Image (cartoon, rainbow, N blue to C red):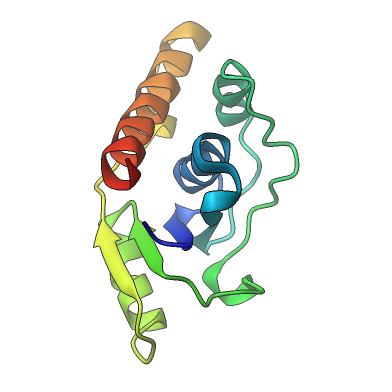
Length: 137
C-alpha cells in the first residue's frame, strides 16, 4: 500500500476531490491523500452534497492545479481522465512515481432534474469508492 497518493483530473472540483476524501475517510492516517487538476475548477455543490450523504466533510477542499501543489512527492498518482493522464505523465516525467489511469465518468455532464444529476454524482462516488477499495484493500 502506498503511503501517499495524488488524484488528478481535468479540474480539481468533482472526481479528484471525491477520491481524495474517500481515501481519507477509508484509510485515515495510513495513506496521505491529495488531489489536483490540470485546470483550476470551482467548488461544486453537487459533489459536496453527495459526499455529505456519506458524512464526509469536503468543506476544506480548495481546487488547485498540479503546479500549485505544495507537496508533489508522492508514491502513487492516479489520473481520472485521459487528458489528466497525459498532463500528469509530462509533469512527473523526471520523477520516479507510479502513475495509474482510472477512466472515470464525469457526472457534471448529467442532464435532468436535481435528483437525476445527484444520481450521476452518486454513481461516480460509488465507482471511485469501489476502485479505491479494490486497489488499497
